[in-house]
Every structure is written in C-alpha cells, then in structure tokens.
Length: 216
Length: 216
Image (cartoon, rainbow over all chains, first blue to last red; front, side, top):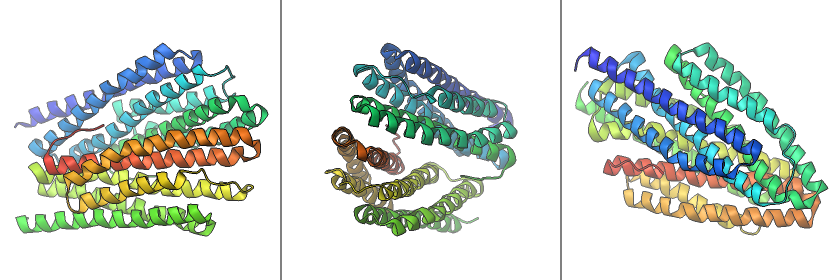
C-alpha cells in the first residue's frame, strides 16, 4: 500500500466519524423538539433511527481495525485510529440516550398532564452545546474547544442535582405526578450522562491532538 | 522484537485485565455488603478505590497502544488487543457505578429509615452473576459463558421495571420517603447499567474468540 492510499483511508475514516456525528446531531435536535412538544411520533422516529447509528459504529469499528491491521499506523496516526475506536462508543451512547429519553417521553405522555421541571430546557441547552462543540472540535481537531467542553460538564451536573430536588418537591406536593416525575428523573440522568460522554470524547480529541491522555 | 517477546507482552496484558477484573469484583462485593448493612465507611472505601481502577484502565490502554504500534499484531492477536481496549472501558464503568451506588447509599443513610425495595437483593444477585461470569469468560476465553451472560440481561432489565413500580407505590403511600426512593431509583438504574456493561464485555469476548462482531 502506498502512503497515498493510507491518507485516503484516514480521510474516509475521519469523514465517517463526522457523518456519525451529523446523525447524532439530528437525533439530538429532534429529541429536544419532541420533549418540548411532547411529540410521540417524533419520539418514535428517534427510537427507530438508533439502528442507523449502531450500524455506523460497527462500520467505523471495522474500518479502524482494518487500518491498524493493514496499514500498521504509528505515532499520531495510530493515536487517531485508536481514539476513534473509543470516540464512536461515546457517540453511540449519546444517541442511545436520545432514544432512551424518547421512550420516557412516551411514558410521560400517557399520564395526566404536568409541567416539565423549570430548568430542564436550560440543562438541555448546556448539554446540547457540549455535544455540538465536541463534534466541532473533532471536525477541526481543536484541543482548545475540547477543553471548553470539559469545563461545561460541572454545569450539567449541577442542573441534575437541582432539578432532582425540584422533582422531589413536585412529588411531595402532588402524589399523582410521581410516575411522571420518576420518568423526568431518568431523563435528567440521561442528559447528565450525555454530558459525561461528550467529556469523554473531548478527552480523546485532546489525546489525538496533544498526545497526552488524561481520562477523568 | 521476537515472537516470544510479543507472546510475553500479550500475557502481561491478559493478566492485567484479569487484575482489573479482580479489583472490580472486590468493589462489587463490598458495594453489596455496604448496601445491605447501610455501611457508610465501607461505601467511602469503595469511592476511594475508584482511582485505582482508573489508573489500571489508563495503564492497560497504554499497553494496548504500545503493542499495536510496536508489534503490529494481525488477525486474532489484533482482535484481542483492540477488544481489550473496549473491555476495559466497560470494566471501568461498572466500577464507577459501584462508587455511584455508594454515594447514593450515603444519601439514603442520612434520611429517616425505610425498608429497601423487596426485590433489590435479587436484582443485585443476577447482576453480580453477570459481572463475575463475564470476568470468568474473559479469563478462560469462553464464548459460551459469554453468551450466557448476554442471556441474563433481560432478567436485570425486568427487575428494573418492577422495582421502579414498587418505588412509585412506596412514594405514593408515604411522601416522607420520596428522597430515599429517588436515591433507590438511581441505584437500580446503575445496577441495570452494570448488566448492560457486562453484556458489552461479553460481546467483545465473543468477538475475540469467534471473530464475529455482534454489538447490541
């Protein structure tokens, strides 16, 4: 194999990760709309799309293994390929959580109406920014942007704590909304996890760019 | 490098994963005891041990990257090294969840006494068997045992659903226990995730042994 073939294969790999990121962004945006509008049809569409992300993960996984086996990359190229193997696991998990949230949305929809927790949409906005910035920092191999993602994780964690308390209060005031509040607790837990997975990806991007591996 | 050096390095890697599995089993067993006895000191010990697992993950991660870079393994050896990179992420997450559960245990302990959900210990036993069997199937590279782990995941998922309902009932009957019940909901969610991570590991073990990658 020539060096040129290898560079081409790395490009294909890079673009396939970006493609996986685009599908994730689509699910993420639709999940936010579905949750806002309690749109069960859109929720179902997100759940159905999860297979597409799983297939992309498997395809990229195989591409990575093939490149390592056939091209025997070294140094920064090897770092990139092995990091991508990690990154796609986290992308797949974030997409999984879009589907998980969609399923809880369907449960909430079946039960008597209740107002969503006050700061839920704020929490979602911070998490969304983390995911989008993570994908951008992969596209541009931007370690500074990756660092900014990691810095936002505490904000999401704090929202989880405060919204949990808010939900406990809501349950204590009206026991009829307990099942929905439990569903909302699961939803904010998934949002918090999506922040964690973005942080993981950001750490791998820093490793690709700088060669230093710092896992939280 | 001779083939002998390579075989030695793969052995070291295999044994380091087993070592990481042993530390996980220790935390898992202690987490179960801590939860049963509401032992906050033991819970703190589990939280403190989490760093040890993180360091093992990073060390094994580096060993894998070094072996791929220097030894350029092919076929089943390459499959094993790349799979181990995935497996250690799941082992680390299961250990994380032992620490997460320990933190919620501390919250429950601070609040007025309530009985643990009826089937919690049954759920834990099934999850524990999944984790232990997963580690055993790695030690013996046993694809059949790995398949048996995957088959148990539905049992853990069903426990999550039934115990969630039980906790909703408990909250509706006595609003004073709402904060503890919320903590228990997080605990059973972590137990369910520990089952999922065991399934992931089992799938990677099947891939190592059979060469067929089937991700759920």
